[in-house]
Image (cartoon, rainbow, N blue to C red; front, side, top):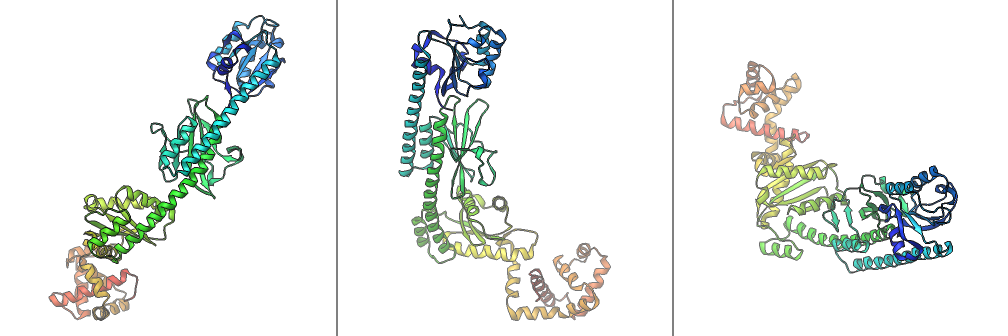
Length: 530
C-alpha cells in the first residue's frame, strides 16, 4: 500500500487542520493515506477501506459514550489511516477516553480546521495524494531506466543488485538455485524462501498485476517481496526485496519484477560468456589430458591461453558415473571444484579430476574428496580411480593409470568404490596375462581337471585352492575363512594335488597354479566364462 503518511499530510496542508491538530494516536502518524472519505453513520467501520482518512463531525456518536469507545478499535481493524474530526459543531471536544483508546491503538485522531469546507479539504487532500503518486511513478520510471542501464552496461551481479537496492532505497538480494547469494547488505541474512510455490506454478493469490511474487512481513513489520528470476520456464533463483513498514509498496512490487526480468537476461548473457569460456577450457583440457599436447612449454602456453594457471604437479583421478550427468549437475560440480582449486573435465559418463598434491597427497584426503563429490551427485553411483602425482607433461599417463585402477579395482575389491593405482600391484600383471590369449589358455588349461572334478562331484576344490593362496598357504586361516575343519582342508589340498597331478610344494608348479587361479578369479569377477 502506498500513500502519504498522516504526518506528511499535516505538514503539507497545515491550514486544513487545527493548530494543535494531533489529539491522540501519535504512534500511528506513519500510517499511509491512500484515499479520503466523509461519513456520518453509526456503523461507519463497515463502509471504510484500508488507507482511508476518515473526515467526520462525529454526529452519529456524539451522545453515545459506548459507541465512542468502540469506534477506535473497529476503525483500526478496518485498517484506516486516521480519523479527522471537525469539532465545535456537534462535538465540542473529543472525549478523553477516545483519545486514550487512540493512543493504545496507535490510530491517530486529528482535529480539522473549522473554517474550511469539506469540499476544499477533499480536493486538496486528494491533490496531495495524487502528487505523491505522480512522484512515485516518476521515481519508478527513473529506477527502471537505471536498472536497465546497469544491465546494458554489462555490470556484474553485485553492481546490478546494488543498483536495484539504490533505486528502492532498501536492501535487495539475489538467491541463486545453486545456493549462492548476492546481497546489497551483507549484514542482512538471506533466508531461503520456504513457502515458494511448487513446480514453478504461481497461483493467482501469489500474483500482483500478473507478476508472480510472494509477499510477507517479518516480525518487525518489514515487508518482504520475493520474485522468481525465470525465463521460458527455467528458474535461476529469486530476487528478494525488503521495505520498512512505511516504505513504498508500489515501488517495490513494480521495480522488483522488472529487475528480475533484466537479471535473467544478464544471467543468460553471463552464462553464455561463461559457457564459451568453459568450452575453450574443456577443449584444452581434453587435448592435454588425452595426450594430444606434448611438452611442458606447449601445455603451459595452451593453459595460459584459456586462463588456466597450472600447478607444478597433480594427482589425476577419474570417476565413472552410472549414467550421464545433466548440465545443471555438471555446472554445480564444476563450481564447487573450482572453489577448491581442482581442475575438472566431463567426458560423457567419465569425470576427470586433477587434484593439487599439496592438499591431496594423503589417501584420506582423497577419500574425503570422493565423499564430497558423491554427495553433490547423490543420484549417481560413482567409482573413482586415482594415479600417483604427475607433472603436467605426464598427466595423460596419470589418466591412464587412474582408468586402470577403476578397471581392475572393482574386480579385486568389489565392495569398494575408491581405488589407487599404487594398490593394484600384481593385479596389473594378472590383467596383462589374462589379456594374452596364449598365456591365458595355457594357465586355464592347467585348472581344467579341477573344474571337471568339481562339476562332476558337486565339490568345491577350486574354491578351496583360491582361498588357500589368498591365505598365503595357511591351512589354519583357510579353514577359518571356509568355516570348515582343519583336517578337511588338509584332505582337500591333498585331493587337489592328485586331480591336478601337481606338487604345490614345488616352486615352479606352485607358481603355475597361483597364476592360473589368479587369471581364473579375474575372469570370474568379470562374470565371464574363461
